[in-house]
Image (cartoon, rainbow, N blue to C red; front, side):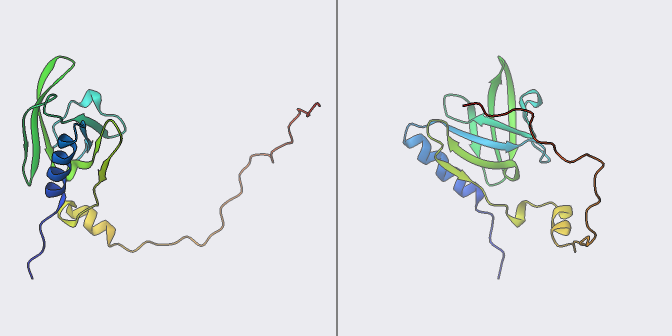
Length: 145
């Protein structure tokens, strides 16, 4: 049997349409470190960036099975944004948080991630070493009634 294609692009388009039909503002959470992701790096925080992809906020929005791409302005500077499907973490409405977080799909894992997810993990049966910190003292404050 032929493997199934990833469902993320289909779900992304469906959620986008649903949010727009309900006059909500769709935002996507993007993993900025996925290979091929083109976003303004100065707005990346903790490896992620949240982007407003509403029709009024972006131009030439295209959601294909492989990429989300559009034109947008960041700080007044026009930029081309390219988001591989693997970089899309979630889509939600700004107004109420309605949306979804996408599952990790095998099709989007890099070979290293697949290999590491199947590796054997060794356990360390040794007890943790004691620290040199003195035991915690009681507070010097007292309760006054």
